[in-house]
Image (cartoon, rainbow, N blue to C red):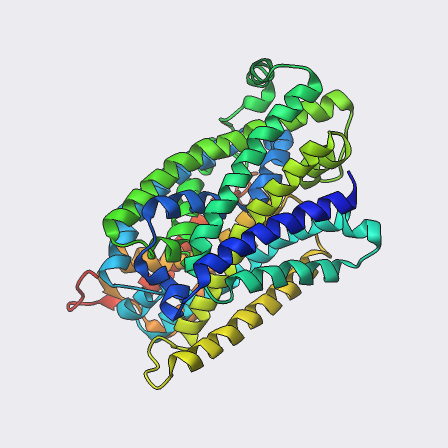
Length: 487
């Protein structure tokens, strides 16, 4: 497939995206940027969040992952469903009751200044690394199949991608993202369905027959019963619950979209609807992955890394139309996670560390100027991280993201669990030390788990261990709080 055609599709899609941005960003102010003036329709938020949750990582890593892990990822997805119900019934009511813009201000109300800054700091660290990895995945595909052909260096490609995201989130923020995510989710889902159809046609086998072949093969294995295995089904299920609670319920990016709904009932309807659809969509991605594996086996295709399976087949072995479908789907999946991350990080830094929402001395014009500076600074940080990841790309990106989440969201899980389910007062000044020590201990245990625990290997449940260590650390240095009232 011609690099010019790939680039042309990318540019056409970008023009359409900026048209949506122009319409939604007019007359936007700081409240529009941070919480969309709390007027976002719940069904639009629910639909758009599908694209934001899946991202370019799901679009490429999950299908490529099937060759190594079969359908065992479904146990994580079933855990997601439980986690979303916890968010809807426990966390969302808390956030709406306290009228939060940044969800980490809860920690200040419950524990104090240092706990608040620790929680916000861990979110910024985790979201920066996770979003940068997601960006890297898409930028790397553009580099391999477009820019390398023209001998344009990787850093130029990265700058172009990040500048585009800056431009369409700069003014409208969350109000713009609610609608651009909807636009992009539509194209992403169409791309998955059409890719399955094109693979079926290229192999000259009906979709139904290929599904039967998948179901009768080892690829369809969902449950792994060996408890030593890192993908043991119970570990996967419970990890999925807490991955969702932390990476959605304790994540400013995802909650910022929910908090833009009119009220708690609409936010809960959004969460319930979104969670059900997401299970089906993830299963669809796994089916696509199985189709790709069959195609690769039939054609004798081999790739160095699983993340390269989908683009290699789409661009080099199938018709140009299939390549166009892949390109649209990838960009549609990539932009929602990148734009949401940039907006939520801007919100967290602006409110949690600069306190722009409390600065009565600032005019709207000056506050907006500060917000622009933060926005550009975070985008620059994204660029630096993407360049670093380009030097160490050696495994499926989705694996890296969940590994990062285990170490960086664990302290948040421990903090919120302690705050919500105990009546004790933590030692606020010690919170940063406890939150840093817990991931360090987890790193050590993960490195020597085989020797220490009779061959046991940690998987995604590292998040649970990390949260537990943080919880116990807070508990050890806490005291009874007779005046505590549930928030």
